[in-house]
Amino acid sequence: MRSNYLFTSESVSEGHPDKVADQISDAIVDLFLSKDPEARIACETLTTTQLVVLAGEIRCKGVFENGQWASGAQEEIEQAVRETVKRIGYEQDGFHWKNLRFENNLHAQSAHIAQGVDASGNKDEGAGDQGIMFGFACDETPDLMPATLDYSHKILAKMAADRHSGRAPFLEPDAKSQVTLRFENGKPAAATAIVVSTQHAPGFDQGEKETELKNYVKGAIAEVLPANLLSDETVYHINPTGSFEIGGPDGDAGLTGRKIIVDTYGGASPHGGGAFSGKDPTKVDRSAAYITRYLAKNIVAAGLATRCTIQLAYAIGVSEPLSLYVDTHGTGSVDDAKIEDAIKSIKELGGLTPRGIRTHLGLNKPIYRPTAAYGHFGRKPEGDFFPWERTDLVEKLKAAIA
Image (tube, rainbow, N blue to C red; front, side, top):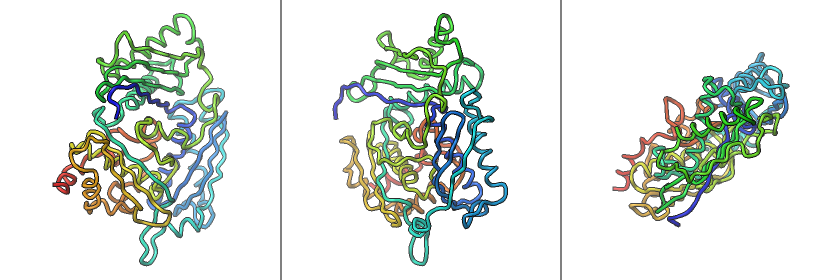
């Protein structure tokens, strides 16, 4: 590994059109799981000017069975969509929670997919699809996340909190950030460039109002990034194109699953290619990505490495993973193969089958909408939320390796 280099990651806000789509899709996942913990959901969302369209496949007891909607179910879905858009803060001429048109094109899950996933006879529940999933952790931040992505997320989360509280009423929901850090001896040493583009109220692209906006953004950055990373050498690009009044789905169409690098590790780790939002936890694109993060984070938290990548692979309809791969990038205190053996020996993980993952992490619950903005990883585990961020496997890993 190089020890001295520049690295960059980006984030997008909850009002970015793709993130609006992700949050709607996960609001639908939560709605169905609240009705039926064994629901099957694959919900895709399209957002554009004054329009939200849902498409995908579902199966949910008491809501959608045998191709029929229960009474009031479609109205409840529409309400969840509009409430999500309202919560984000869209009340604009081009996209308004109350005035947007809504289409629901969800239909029944394929029986041929269901037969592979469902448990029957001696067959355990199978993976909802084939694929590869990666998890990652490193010691660059207290959250054990890549610093460039962690700070990119936190800048936008801070700005959103100030917008919602009224502290920064000139901000509108759509925004993007990007942080470039210089690394020395493999550790963050300085922020060389920070980019923030934020949608704003009319007039905040010129004169004193523009200065107010830019000073606010610099202040928000200073509240988020460690002071030792910022200096007179840091270059700021704040709304570098000028005006940004037209944004969100009115400025650009949004689709579920188009921000998978923002959702994961900001490019610091490989990605298997599958998106998360809109999928129930039988889909290993989601649940296996969560368990690999959980394992990688616990390995770093246990002091077994300072950097760890884990890969799992699955075949549709097959319960056992096809492979488990651990790479500590030369930072491990023990051999990577020994860590792999330790993971396989921990019974609580249920053999890393889809059912075992969901049981250990408690994933059959309506816990997903908060994941759909500001990253699925590096978040604080609270109650049922973000259980893959717990570090409760540390002692078991140490004991298994001892």
